[in-house]
Amino acid sequence: MNRLTDISYVKSVLSKHGFTFSKALGQNFLINPNVCPKMAEECGCGADVGVIEIGPGAGVLTNALADVAYKVVAIELDKRLISVLEETLSEHNNVKIINGDVMKLDIGKIIREEFEGGEAVVCANLPYYITSPVIMKFLEERLPINSLTVMVQKEAADRICAVPGTRESGAISAAVNYYSKPEILFRVSKGSFLPAPKVDSAVIKLNILKEPSVGVGDEKMFFKIVKAAFSQRRKTLANSLSSGLSISKSEVTQILERVGINQTARAEEMTMENFAAISDEFLN
Ligand code: SAM
Image 1 (cartoon, rainbow, N blue to C red):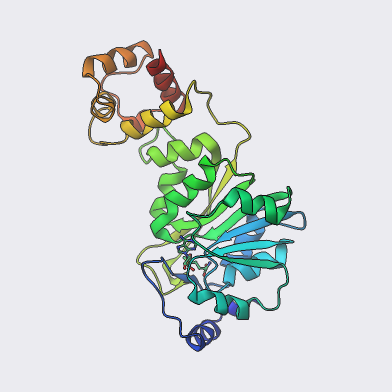
Image 2: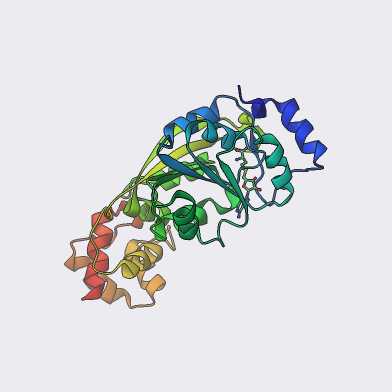
C-alpha cells in the first residue's frame, strides 16, 4: 500500500516541511490510490526500462514507479519539495531526484548519463500550465525514449490525441501524430487530486515512432504550414495560410489546387498526408 495516497499522511508530511500548494506551478497532487500503480504498469517501465518523471510533487507516482522500474529519475522544479521527497521516498534506493526546470535541462544528457544507453520511458502527472511545451520538447528533441505516458487535463487529452482530419484536431494533434501514435488510456476524475482542480483529467500514452508518420521534404516547412493552417480556426485553410505565411491568396489557391484540395476546406479537415502534400508543394 502506497501511504502517499493517504491524505492525512501527505498533509502531515507537507505541513511538517512548511509546504503550501502553488497554483502557478500546477501543483495538484494525486490522492486516488488506484491511479499511480496503473500508470506505472501501463507506461512500459520495468526491470530493463528506466523511467523519467517530470514533477514528482510529494512522490506518490515516483513511489509506484520505483516499485516497477529498475531506476527512476525525477525532475522537480520546486526546491521546497526536495526535502519532502527525501522523506517520502526514503525506502527506495533506485530514485534520483534532480532539482531543476524540465524546460531548461538538457534531457538528452540526463538520459545518456542516468540510463547509460539503456531503454527509457517518460511517466508524469504534468503541471497543466506547460503540458504542450513539455510534450513538444520531448518529441522535437528526438530523445531516446520509447513513449510518454502523461496525465493531462481531459480537454487537452482530446486535443492532443485527436486524429488529424477530424473536428477536434489542431496544430498539437498534427505535431504529436507526426512523431508518435497517441492513445487515451483512461480518465481520472478531479476528485482524485489534492487540491481538486476545476476539470477532470486523462492519462494519455504517446508511443514514439521510429520514423515520422509521413515523409516530408522539409520538416520546418511542414510545421510552418501546420501552424499557419490552424492560426485562425474560423477561416478557410486558404485564408489562414495566406495571412499566416504572408503570401497572396491567389498563390495559395494555386498550390491547393495542384494538390487537389478544395478552396473552401478548413484546417481541421486536413489529414497528415494532406499537410505533407501542401508543405512539399510549397517547396517547389
Ligand atoms: N507527481 C505528483 C503527483 O502526481 O501527485 C505531482 C504532480 S503536479 C500536477 C506537477 C508537479 O510538477 C509539481 O510538483 C510541480 O512543482 C512540478 N513542476 C512544475 N513546473 C515544473 C517544471 N518546469 N519542471 C519540473 N517540475 C515542475
